[in-house]
Image (cartoon, rainbow, N blue to C red; front, side, top):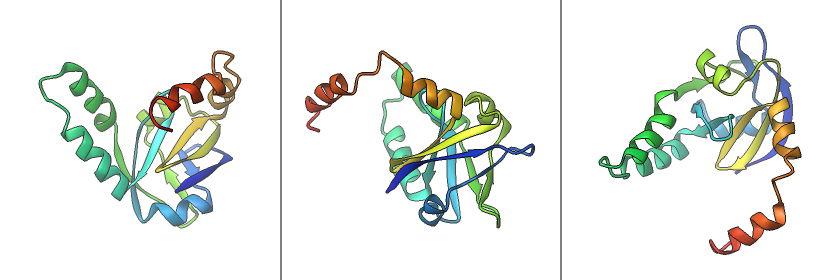
Length: 143
């Protein structure tokens, strides 16, 4: 399980340091793809396989299902961590998530999310986000 919040930066070659606590759980290879809310998602190979199976199970006849599948799969990249604990994030994914210099990595259970620190701050300061209201909605889902 991935938990925690860490701040780092993107270097001039598009490399990002993966926090040590995350590295030990990621494995040698992992998948980086576009995430929702303008961030990137990082999945272990096992978690990616589970997610991909769910995508394959979606009805091909549904335009929304096809679009959802394209969103996650088209930009997905298999990546590895170098000897210094960094990963090179592809340019198209850095552009999508607006990763310029300062980044924030967060653990979200079965995945890691990479946010531009400015975007992460805006997300956390969003006045329309009400944790109590969200908790009530989640209660209807059994949480």
